[in-house]
Length: 341
Image 1 (spheres, rainbow, N blue to C red):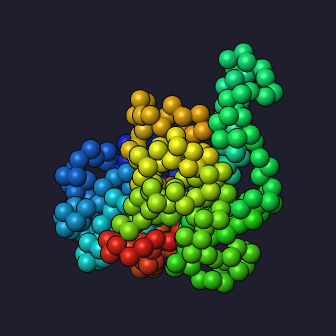
Image 2: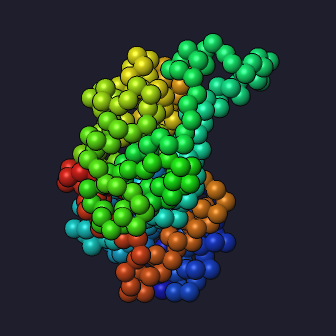
């Protein structure tokens, strides 16, 4: 009989070849579960020493109260908006995630979306595929003006965490001026990156591109709504590769249609998935991808093995490297504010 029982919850094909050799180091049995309800999650973890979550698995107070001996739950992703961190702490369950394991991928897609939406690449590609080979089209020029040079413009990063710190140097490499807001950040980190910290109001008012990299803390829900869009430059673009709930989708649609802002690029949406008949998908100045920014062959391996390593650390009496105890994550239940992911 194995010393420990580790339950992997997920609907995908489980990468046993990546996880099992790591768990074997502490004689831990790997049990695969594919729960569809909260009750099934609780049942799967009832006798587990540790749990690994892949996907948007809920971790509620009711589930946590039924775990008999679970010491750690580790996500193979970053977001924890479906996890009751306060209840976990009260029951002595450590929550960890894969912060940093896919930050490069999200940063790369952020920069890709920035260039694509500013240069109208998706629209231009569509024209060519439709047989309309024109270097200049009336629609491209009429819809929020012609294409402008990216060099020398200002990128405002909301949340200078793992991802924001990867975005900043890539943007600087494009000769963008970069500024950021993050109320929980050590100012020395921003100084080392050469990124001035400003207030959210100033960032919104002065940025040509605004890129969101904050968690979905309670106080950050719909942090970008009508007032924020009204304060943005009419030539500015919004990029969101964090969480769809950070943006008021109805307000964004109205801002795009009215010309309050020039365009948006979204890897995450609210609702998600975005219905095929949603009006925002009809707009030519919007790019939407299906929450794929974190995806790559490398990040998949890193996230899976990281989760297994965190489990081994905790069951061996050590602290995990990505324990979720930072102030911005406590804000999820305490409604205090936001920071960076």
